Length: 113
Length: 113
Image 1 (cartoon, each protein chain N blue to C red):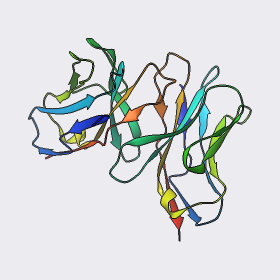
Image 2 (image 1 turned 180 degrees about the vertical axis):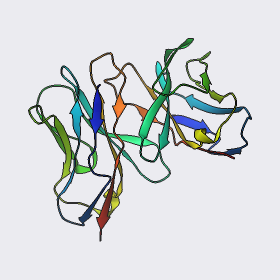
Image 3 (image 1 turned 90 degrees about the horizontal axis):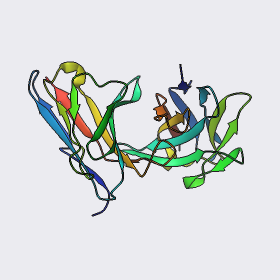
């Protein structure tokens, strides 16, 4: 089906483990984004990508790594998970820059114990 | 600093009554403004945006918003609320064309039957 998907939808891990969250879109959108959603903070941008092999930091990039080898995929890796990274993570995509509508995935709920 | 504020964490409205969800912004230059809605366990969905032109913008599900430059506001409105409008609403701003979008913290809207 066309759209933007995230996997897993739910993940429980332990402090210090590496975790990768997957994001896949079928529209061939150039731009992709990773956000985290926390109570009291709304959505905060972690990383974004303007095209394959082009990535840049957002507001809260520390502790996260991204890659974009293919236009349709934008995985987010927590290299050594911490409790403060417990959150809901959303991936989004759009055709071009800030003025175009972003399309969001369903989210991944991550719990770090 | 460029920012967007949603002064109310929660808004309660009786079904059938008009609703308003407030948003103010602080940016230099001419902002681009958005509203997104999030239903439970879902990603954000686009509602409407103001880029230029008419200050009154109409969007999905009967919602509209008015850009008020003098008051630096972009309040979301609907003439008659439905129980199904209950959700989390995010205002967002793109300060300049090439900037990344900045989301507010969200306002939870409860429509009471």
